[in-house]
Image 1 (cartoon, rainbow, N blue to C red):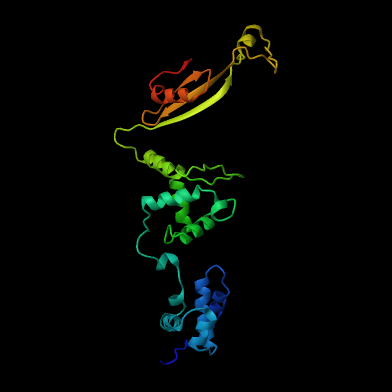
Image 2 (image 1 turned 180 degrees about the vertical axis):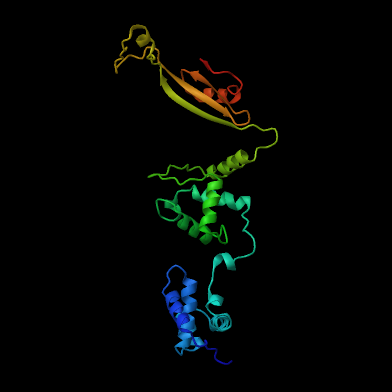
Length: 262
């Protein structure tokens, strides 16, 4: 096979190729410019391939492109050279991306905080996605309302069934079965029974001060609340004690019972 040599360079082409060779933002441009300059310097295609870390066939292809179309033919832009149409990420793939983003990075990559480049590199290395840009990754996380967890310690469950159950709950939360209801349960307390200010000042014009070490003769109360996502209603019950029976009661009965003091 005859030796393929790059054509004679114009003055402005030589200057631009030298600038492309020194680029750090695009390794593709630097490689292509280096191939053309080495070819004009008298190196053979095999020597160029050994220096640039590619094959001789690829060197010949780049030289042919340059000889036919100039610098524009060896310039690579992702938004021009990509596949037609936007990439499609299925629901399972998006769910895995969100799960990795919400996982502690200390165990996965040995670092304390995630970032978009680190997350993208990990997803491609684990073959979760074939490829994704930083902007697309940011939009996927934003659409699914995933935010970075800036925490010093990660307190995750050691139960082996935790993540399968977690994924089922997320699926049910995003896709409610027909006729089903989603209820969010939370508890608040202990609540101190404190006297409220305002009435004494309105009557006498003086502020009724309370000591910091007052005696809690009325005791404390615990509130169990249940939020129904379908009805958009929040109800709850106040109890003197906090136990599992109270939680079960608010799940089964508290949704339809009014807020009352027990």
